[in-house]
Image (tube, rainbow, N blue to C red; front, side, top):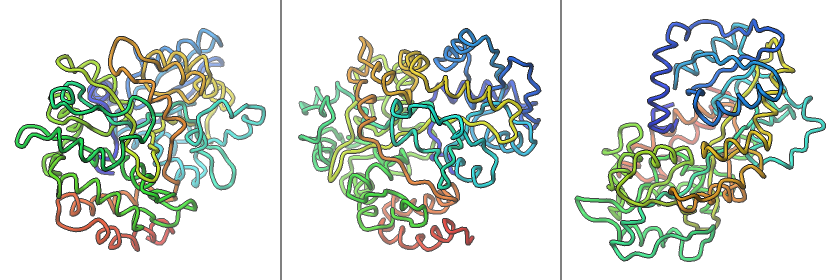
Length: 430
């Protein structure tokens, strides 16, 4: 996974670095619970104390009388390494954050607790689909738990639109005057050569699924059975090319060579260098804290055949070897409850997976004025189909796309060239 594949906010990044520094000595140790009769061990890849999630854990403690012990852990790839270590040790924390890329692989290895037996009397209609169903495996097991989602929308600089005399994007989920052509025309009007760009789409890798599906490539990146690399289909390649041509043909998007550092999309937006960016709900806290000199808002992605969007999923799990599976389930179930969701929604951390709680994400006197569009996104979601080698496939095709982004080759040619190797990976032949 290259550095552009896992998007985190600058605030989270800085918090994570501080946390990693304090827990470096523990990073290679086992994460065994060894807990008392009312204790639940919990591991997350970002700081929990003082966050909406931390408030949810305190509410759980008050409600149940149980004690949630947070185990320190590093950020990023170091967290993934530690997670593998504690899972292989046979004494993992009762509940831990897991990268969604790894759910299928760890499930195939039998490392994650199947939660389906606890769900028999659970009303799953209370949850946002299809994101809630993401951890469901082909054999019917449910090996992880989605707590929330971070839908992707278009973030835009309201003041730039006003200064240029350009009509703003829609304030509701509609394609009226908001198609791919409309986006391009708007970006052209907002671009000032050598000063600012109109838009930035291809930096957030979630555009692959969103824009390919919206172009009529129904499955998106991978086929439903996880065996075909459908991003290489004509419609998928056309979507990649469209996003790239914003730079290579139209000059309304920053060149790829200028985007080779983490969080650069957010930095360019906060600096007033880009008028519109495609990003997740997760960047709202950073933008709200950082932007002081202009007004900003959000709008749905532009439409073509469809008008959907992908959401990053906030996923937790328990290990097959967990010492306290019943306690783990109690905490996981609470994290997805309406009670917990109300806390998360109020904190504007991410969309809670609970539908009723998600509706509480409403406008305040602070931007974005149309934050409710994140909640409405629940009705327009698309999600990449799972495969047995998603991370490995990305490591193969995303670096190859650099030739496209650098205007050196067509999307169709590059995707066709890597398709056989990607599909060998998906079939477990490499």
